[in-house]
Length: 265
Image (cartoon, rainbow, N blue to C red; front, top):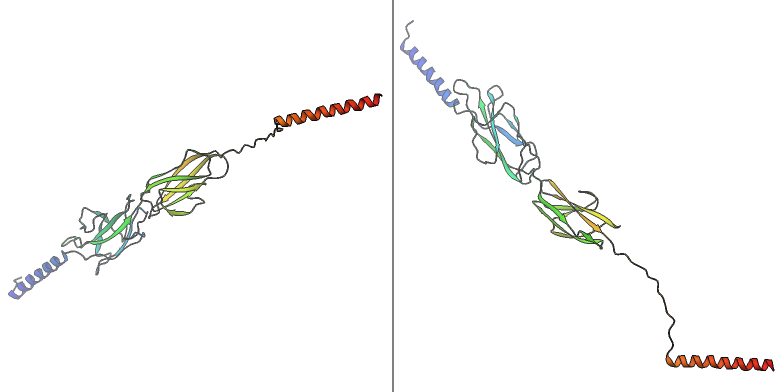
Protein backbone atom coordinates (compact mmCIF):
# COMPACT_ATOMS: atom_id res chain seq x y z
CA UNK A 1 0.00 0.00 0.00
CA UNK A 2 1.40 3.34 -1.12
CA UNK A 3 0.76 6.27 1.20
CA UNK A 4 -0.04 9.59 -0.37
CA UNK A 5 1.26 12.88 0.93
CA UNK A 6 -1.85 13.67 2.99
CA UNK A 7 -1.72 10.31 4.76
CA UNK A 8 1.93 10.81 5.68
CA UNK A 9 1.17 14.25 7.15
CA UNK A 10 -1.74 12.81 9.15
CA UNK A 11 0.47 10.10 10.65
CA UNK A 12 3.20 12.59 11.54
CA UNK A 13 0.62 14.93 13.14
CA UNK A 14 -0.81 12.09 15.22
CA UNK A 15 2.64 11.10 16.46
CA UNK A 16 3.45 14.69 17.39
CA UNK A 17 0.11 15.07 19.16
CA UNK A 18 0.68 11.95 21.27
CA UNK A 19 4.21 13.09 22.03
CA UNK A 20 2.91 16.51 23.11
CA UNK A 21 0.29 14.93 25.38
CA UNK A 22 2.89 12.66 26.97
CA UNK A 23 5.21 15.61 27.57
CA UNK A 24 2.36 17.42 29.34
CA UNK A 25 1.51 14.35 31.41
CA UNK A 26 5.17 13.91 32.37
CA UNK A 27 4.78 16.84 34.77
CA UNK A 28 2.78 14.48 37.02
CA UNK A 29 -0.42 15.07 38.98
CA UNK A 30 -1.08 18.18 41.02
CA UNK A 31 -1.03 18.43 44.81
CA UNK A 32 -3.28 16.26 46.94
CA UNK A 33 -6.42 18.01 48.13
CA UNK A 34 -8.08 18.52 51.53
CA UNK A 35 -4.95 17.63 53.50
CA UNK A 36 -5.68 17.72 57.24
CA UNK A 37 -4.52 16.36 60.61
CA UNK A 38 -6.91 13.92 62.30
CA UNK A 39 -5.00 13.33 65.58
CA UNK A 40 -5.47 16.73 67.23
CA UNK A 41 -1.95 18.05 66.61
CA UNK A 42 -1.75 21.76 65.87
CA UNK A 43 0.61 24.71 65.68
CA UNK A 44 -0.35 26.33 69.00
CA UNK A 45 -0.69 23.70 71.72
CA UNK A 46 1.68 20.74 72.11
CA UNK A 47 0.07 17.29 72.18
CA UNK A 48 1.40 14.30 74.12
CA UNK A 49 0.39 11.84 71.38
CA UNK A 50 3.40 10.37 69.60
CA UNK A 51 1.50 9.32 66.47
CA UNK A 52 0.33 11.90 63.92
CA UNK A 53 -2.60 10.89 61.70
CA UNK A 54 -3.13 12.65 58.35
CA UNK A 55 -5.99 12.54 55.82
CA UNK A 56 -6.08 13.67 52.17
CA UNK A 57 -7.95 13.35 48.86
CA UNK A 58 -6.70 12.63 45.35
CA UNK A 59 -5.37 15.53 43.25
CA UNK A 60 -7.95 17.36 41.15
CA UNK A 61 -8.95 15.34 38.13
CA UNK A 62 -7.48 12.07 39.45
CA UNK A 63 -9.02 9.01 41.04
CA UNK A 64 -7.89 5.69 42.46
CA UNK A 65 -7.67 4.38 38.88
CA UNK A 66 -5.24 7.07 37.74
CA UNK A 67 -3.19 7.39 40.96
CA UNK A 68 -1.06 4.41 41.96
CA UNK A 69 -0.13 5.73 45.40
CA UNK A 70 1.65 8.38 47.44
CA UNK A 71 5.15 9.16 48.67
CA UNK A 72 5.19 10.87 52.09
CA UNK A 73 7.44 11.98 54.97
CA UNK A 74 7.15 13.23 58.56
CA UNK A 75 10.05 15.46 59.67
CA UNK A 76 10.98 18.81 61.19
CA UNK A 77 11.60 20.53 57.81
CA UNK A 78 8.95 23.03 56.70
CA UNK A 79 9.77 23.23 52.96
CA UNK A 80 10.64 19.62 52.16
CA UNK A 81 10.25 18.18 48.63
CA UNK A 82 9.11 14.57 48.23
CA UNK A 83 11.23 12.09 46.22
CA UNK A 84 10.99 8.40 45.44
CA UNK A 85 13.30 7.74 48.43
CA UNK A 86 10.53 8.62 50.87
CA UNK A 87 7.92 6.30 52.40
CA UNK A 88 5.22 4.82 50.17
CA UNK A 89 1.51 4.13 50.69
CA UNK A 90 -1.59 3.47 48.61
CA UNK A 91 -3.93 4.79 51.30
CA UNK A 92 -5.52 8.22 51.80
CA UNK A 93 -4.87 7.89 55.58
CA UNK A 94 -1.26 8.10 56.77
CA UNK A 95 -0.04 7.64 60.36
CA UNK A 96 3.46 8.39 61.58
CA UNK A 97 5.64 6.13 63.66
CA UNK A 98 5.57 6.80 67.41
CA UNK A 99 7.50 10.07 67.80
CA UNK A 100 9.46 10.93 70.94
CA UNK A 101 9.93 14.70 71.17
CA UNK A 102 10.02 17.49 73.74
CA UNK A 103 7.76 20.23 72.33
CA UNK A 104 9.06 19.98 68.74
CA UNK A 105 7.39 21.25 65.55
CA UNK A 106 6.73 18.45 63.03
CA UNK A 107 5.64 18.69 59.37
CA UNK A 108 3.95 16.30 56.97
CA UNK A 109 4.77 16.15 53.25
CA UNK A 110 3.01 14.12 50.57
CA UNK A 111 2.99 13.77 46.76
CA UNK A 112 0.82 11.57 44.53
CA UNK A 113 2.21 9.35 41.78
CA UNK A 114 0.20 8.58 38.68
CA UNK A 115 0.13 5.25 36.83
CA UNK A 116 0.97 6.61 33.39
CA UNK A 117 3.45 4.01 32.14
CA UNK A 118 3.90 5.75 28.80
CA UNK A 119 5.56 8.88 30.18
CA UNK A 120 6.17 7.80 33.75
CA UNK A 121 4.90 7.01 36.23
CA UNK A 122 5.32 10.55 37.49
CA UNK A 123 5.51 12.01 41.02
CA UNK A 124 3.31 15.07 41.45
CA UNK A 125 3.88 18.29 43.37
CA UNK A 126 4.59 18.12 47.11
CA UNK A 127 1.93 19.33 49.54
CA UNK A 128 3.23 20.41 52.98
CA UNK A 129 1.34 20.60 56.27
CA UNK A 130 2.41 21.98 59.63
CA UNK A 131 3.76 22.82 62.06
CA UNK A 132 2.28 20.31 64.50
CA UNK A 133 3.66 20.46 68.03
CA UNK A 134 4.60 17.10 69.57
CA UNK A 135 5.56 16.75 73.24
CA UNK A 136 5.77 13.21 74.60
CA UNK A 137 8.54 13.84 77.16
CA UNK A 138 7.64 14.30 80.83
CA UNK A 139 9.08 17.26 82.79
CA UNK A 140 12.65 16.59 83.93
CA UNK A 141 14.43 17.31 87.21
CA UNK A 142 11.34 16.83 89.39
CA UNK A 143 12.21 17.10 93.08
CA UNK A 144 10.84 18.06 96.50
CA UNK A 145 12.57 18.32 99.89
CA UNK A 146 11.91 19.43 103.44
CA UNK A 147 13.45 19.07 106.90
CA UNK A 148 14.46 15.51 107.72
CA UNK A 149 13.07 15.92 111.26
CA UNK A 150 10.77 18.54 112.73
CA UNK A 151 8.70 19.20 115.84
CA UNK A 152 6.44 21.60 113.94
CA UNK A 153 3.41 20.49 111.95
CA UNK A 154 3.95 23.31 109.46
CA UNK A 155 7.12 23.02 107.34
CA UNK A 156 8.69 24.74 104.33
CA UNK A 157 9.13 22.62 101.21
CA UNK A 158 11.72 23.24 98.49
CA UNK A 159 10.59 22.36 94.96
CA UNK A 160 12.15 22.18 91.49
CA UNK A 161 11.36 20.96 87.95
CA UNK A 162 12.04 21.74 84.29
CA UNK A 163 9.38 22.48 81.62
CA UNK A 164 6.39 22.13 83.96
CA UNK A 165 3.69 24.77 84.36
CA UNK A 166 1.73 23.47 87.39
CA UNK A 167 2.23 21.35 90.49
CA UNK A 168 -0.01 19.42 92.90
CA UNK A 169 1.22 18.73 96.48
CA UNK A 170 -0.44 16.08 98.64
CA UNK A 171 -0.11 14.18 101.92
CA UNK A 172 -1.94 11.22 100.34
CA UNK A 173 -0.41 10.37 96.96
CA UNK A 174 0.60 11.63 93.52
CA UNK A 175 -2.18 13.80 92.09
CA UNK A 176 -4.56 12.75 94.89
CA UNK A 177 -6.50 15.04 97.23
CA UNK A 178 -4.65 18.16 96.09
CA UNK A 179 -5.11 21.37 94.12
CA UNK A 180 -3.17 22.33 90.99
CA UNK A 181 -1.24 25.59 91.25
CA UNK A 182 1.58 27.37 89.41
CA UNK A 183 5.04 25.89 89.96
CA UNK A 184 6.95 27.58 92.82
CA UNK A 185 10.41 27.08 94.28
CA UNK A 186 9.13 26.88 97.87
CA UNK A 187 5.86 26.42 99.73
CA UNK A 188 4.63 26.35 103.34
CA UNK A 189 2.94 23.02 104.06
CA UNK A 190 1.08 21.34 106.94
CA UNK A 191 1.88 17.70 107.71
CA UNK A 192 -0.71 15.18 108.82
CA UNK A 193 -1.47 15.02 112.55
CA UNK A 194 0.31 12.44 114.70
CA UNK A 195 3.96 11.69 115.35
CA UNK A 196 5.93 9.54 112.91
CA UNK A 197 7.28 9.46 109.34
CA UNK A 198 5.32 11.65 106.93
CA UNK A 199 5.58 11.41 103.13
CA UNK A 200 4.79 14.51 101.09
CA UNK A 201 4.06 13.95 97.38
CA UNK A 202 4.23 16.34 94.42
CA UNK A 203 3.14 15.88 90.81
CA UNK A 204 4.26 18.28 88.07
CA UNK A 205 2.52 18.71 84.69
CA UNK A 206 3.60 20.40 81.44
CA UNK A 207 1.45 22.13 78.80
CA UNK A 208 0.98 18.86 76.88
CA UNK A 209 -0.28 16.95 79.94
CA UNK A 210 2.88 14.93 80.65
CA UNK A 211 3.49 14.41 84.39
CA UNK A 212 6.49 13.79 86.67
CA UNK A 213 6.40 12.70 90.33
CA UNK A 214 8.63 13.26 93.37
CA UNK A 215 8.31 12.76 97.13
CA UNK A 216 10.12 13.46 100.39
CA UNK A 217 10.09 11.81 103.82
CA UNK A 218 9.86 13.97 106.96
CA UNK A 219 9.99 12.64 110.54
CA UNK A 220 7.47 14.50 112.68
CA UNK A 221 8.24 14.52 116.41
CA UNK A 222 5.87 16.99 118.07
CA UNK A 223 7.09 18.69 121.25
CA UNK A 224 6.00 16.80 124.41
CA UNK A 225 4.33 18.87 127.13
CA UNK A 226 5.47 17.63 130.63
CA UNK A 227 3.22 18.41 133.60
CA UNK A 228 5.26 18.56 136.84
CA UNK A 229 3.70 18.57 140.39
CA UNK A 230 4.09 21.81 142.30
CA UNK A 231 5.40 21.49 145.88
CA UNK A 232 4.79 24.41 148.19
CA UNK A 233 7.07 24.64 151.33
CA UNK A 234 5.97 26.05 154.72
CA UNK A 235 7.37 29.51 154.95
CA UNK A 236 10.15 29.86 157.54
CA UNK A 237 9.95 32.28 160.46
CA UNK A 238 12.12 35.31 160.77
CA UNK A 239 14.26 35.90 163.88
CA UNK A 240 11.55 38.08 165.49
CA UNK A 241 8.97 35.49 164.65
CA UNK A 242 11.01 32.78 166.25
CA UNK A 243 11.33 34.85 169.44
CA UNK A 244 7.60 35.49 169.57
CA UNK A 245 6.85 31.84 168.93
CA UNK A 246 9.20 30.74 171.79
CA UNK A 247 7.69 33.36 174.08
CA UNK A 248 4.21 31.99 173.38
CA UNK A 249 5.35 28.44 174.06
CA UNK A 250 6.94 29.46 177.41
CA UNK A 251 3.85 31.44 178.39
CA UNK A 252 1.61 28.52 177.66
CA UNK A 253 3.86 26.18 179.62
CA UNK A 254 3.86 28.47 182.71
CA UNK A 255 0.11 28.83 182.51
CA UNK A 256 -0.35 25.07 182.44
CA UNK A 257 2.03 24.58 185.41
CA UNK A 258 0.16 27.10 187.55
CA UNK A 259 -3.13 25.51 186.60
CA UNK A 260 -1.90 22.09 187.62
CA UNK A 261 -0.61 23.40 191.01
CA UNK A 262 -4.03 24.87 191.85
CA UNK A 263 -5.62 21.54 191.12
CA UNK A 264 -3.20 19.73 193.54
CA UNK A 265 -3.82 22.15 196.43
